[in-house]
Length: 92
Image (tube, rainbow, N blue to C red; front, side, top):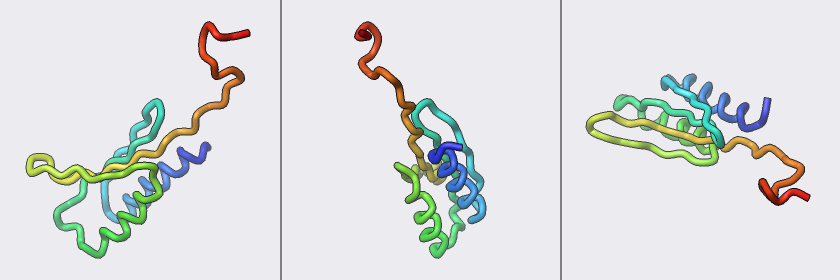
C-alpha cells in the first residue's frame, strides 16, 4: 500500500474514532477525506481533530448556516516515476 493511501486511511480511521462520520474519495492526484462536524463537538475534541488532519497535505473547514460544518483533508498521491518525462513528441 502506498504511503499516501495509508495516511488517508489513518486520518479517516482516527476521525471515525473521535465520533465523526467520514467519507473518503479517490481523485487523480489526491485522496480526500471529509467529515461532518456536529455543533455538539466538545471544544476539547477540536485539539485531537486538528492533530489528525495536520497529517494531511492540506485541510480546512467549510461552515455554512445551510449545510453545517464540513471538515476536509487532502493527501497527495505519489507521482509515478517515468522513464521519460519530456512529454509526447519529445522522445529520442
